[in-house]
Length: 120
Image (cartoon, rainbow, N blue to C red; front, side):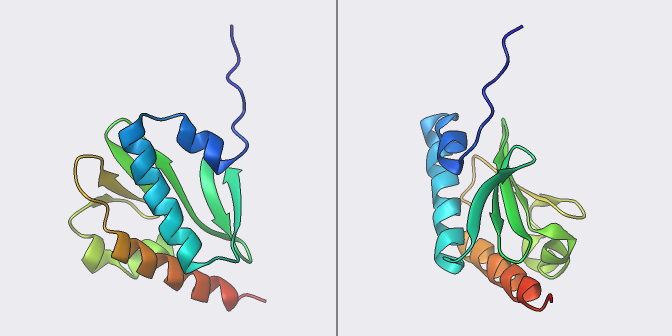
């Protein structure tokens, strides 16, 4: 059995997808980087992860959607704006065949930064 190489960077993660998905993932990453330039980029749970005083957000590509994981509070505080999308307690699914709501993504990331900065 061939073992899959462990992904260690967000660049490696993004490079593993078709070009159309790479573009979407790149835009999401850019919005997060612009919103919180001091965040640390890492791979956690096999997903691109941004950390600042703990986990901020994760995202991951799937066959038909991009999963965005801003913790349950990130979903709850934006449930009205996220209502057009399939979501669960801590995740939302953005279909690959529709534009990603980048402004909403930015607002959620900034909310999560403010939340984490209140931690001791």
